[in-house]
Length: 345
Image 1 (cartoon, rainbow, N blue to C red):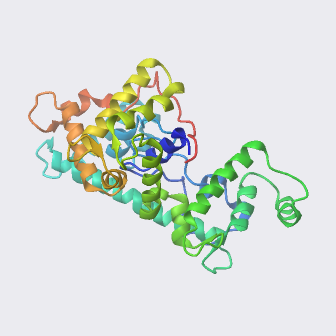
Image 2: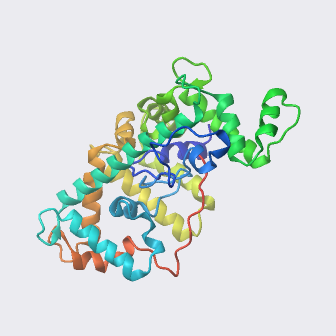
Image 3: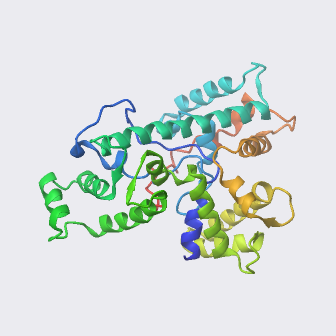
């Protein structure tokens, strides 16, 4: 496995808030295959409030995603409405209504948003699984998923069924074939017990959200260590961690942007990964770091937010300080560009 692939694995699973497909009714009854669109069917490209993107780069919207909760589209609003939403969220976080946000209030808010999105991921998975398991036998075979994939990509039902029956013509476009290869690797990783090329609901959830599967997280950690551990001692040093970053970011933008990302990675290693400050990231420290529900991550980010915006250094945030730093949460209309899909994990 290349170092680039390893970073893609590694960066998937940091502290998270989940990015969900739009308008998925989780109580919806089963629907015909041709009605399933790609957005609902395919594993999400982007997982909100992971500190890193799946393509290995820093998620620049991380703080916005964990702070704004259900206001992910705030950038699409006029500035006056966006600021009003920010004020509304401030008062929701300020549970004792004293006009300030303490680290504890921020921590509880962040943890609540994380857990809510993670729980929603489970509900969404149940709905998608129901769509793909029309006979209700509790399993989705790879061929069933393959069929739904082709239909979601716009191939006709008769064309798809004929192709899956005899494979005498190749109806796949190059990008579709590449996607299926990636998904097949993910499918195989999730097909754990028994290995039968079909997934039950739990395995299907791991296929769509490996960041929530303890076994897959551990597998990823071991792949990361094996790939980056230059001295083969079973641990990662800061240098080993940063070396990988240098290789990955050759096409990450300007030198200033690459340097900013290296600094963020260094800060993450020191403040969030290496918890006992011995200069070594062990397997367990990496697992804890990648655990989406690890409360230490919420605590750390609450501290980061206060440090970033606490202008008068009183250890808490006023509404004025939030407004002074609204650029952390509200992107400028001048520079805001719609997000593009990131590479698949």
